[in-house]
Image (cartoon, helix red, strand yellow):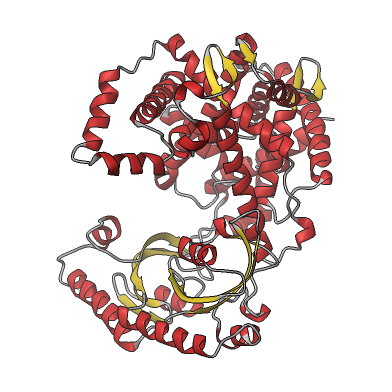
Length: 600
């Protein structure tokens, strides 16, 4: 839509993304009997409308989030981002986020009675009994412990809460479903802007889901605000109460509208997950300043929207109401935009070439990427074993530069950095380091990437997930015999299609046709990348020159593919009559952008 609409969406920090940590309690609660004891001994830190939040819940969720952030920094460090740009997110921010999510979850669980939601114990018992039928007691307890449950009662409670949440969402959002007419109108408005080049029939399902999700997020956020205002929240721990109060600090206000510190926290996480940098005080201060500017702008836009006859949505509150009003105002500027034919004609003449329908082709790419055979893997293992025989601490870096196929570390002598977070690596690699001693060279260790020779330079005595390591990666070479098997499989499919036994549509859609690459393209232009293959101008030119249903075989270093053209659209020059609505919409978007930009 442009900068103005991006600004409107900036404040739409989808709380449900972070809130998912609390929603997924049944899957990620890692508790230990030896630490937490029996259910009756669990320490309650908060009650929300009589729903209890336990200390072990808070601590486990907090650790999960901190581990995820640590892994993110580790990944960025491996990409070459300087360590000084990767500060850890302060505990105050992670603590506030986790506590707010737990409280939000408790609010929703306690609100289930408002919607007359009930989950009978019989329903839970039938599901659990079906799942555990035939499972030995010891195996069951081990499986429950691995998923974070101390006993079967814990597991049943988690299932019950999950079902309550599911039914609650169905009740909350059920009466606010978008119609097909709403979706079509949204598409028509954006067909030459954000959805340019898209076919309505191809994207209408996903577009409806996206629009509906935006609506549901706003409804959920507003509903939680309303629940919070009338909730009975009692703190059993003064430190937890302080964390809660800190998250409620107002960082921006304009009249009745305000932004709390919890929004700042969510924006911080969003920023570091979408950028190469880590946390910094500058990032925090910039976010606070931007939120103030954005709130003031949204309030001013809402004044214009109301003056234009738009009414605030009574189901929404606070900033969510402002965002919704701003979006509807922007859309109304586009929908109601009118201009004379002379202006439309001028726009048409300016953009005539781009309005013409370009020549394009549609078709399929079907094939397999080469995967190493068992013999290819055995050859790689033998190579790694031979290299390891002559590798020691003194020559490890040189050996890595000579033999390693890891593009990120080979030139650095195999080093993965001054510190490596093992929790962010594949389990086989991480376990080999954990089981080894500082100074050891271990391997070859097989992972999905190949065979690793690992030098454990040092280990953190206080954290088993942190070590300084280097490695040499040996990847299997794909043999000609392996490639021939792939080519034969693909050519067998070619024969089936040519004989009329199967269609390209069946191959692309049905799971019984087991190929790594199954892509359909509808409007491929010259110069564009080929789905499943990539940039290949020679192939594109050959495709355009081919006859309909003529199959092109493509043998590439990465795999063997069939490419076919099943439809084509010829070049059609634009006329003023068939381009008037496009010209109007483009002018309307320009007008809406300028209108919002001028509101200060």
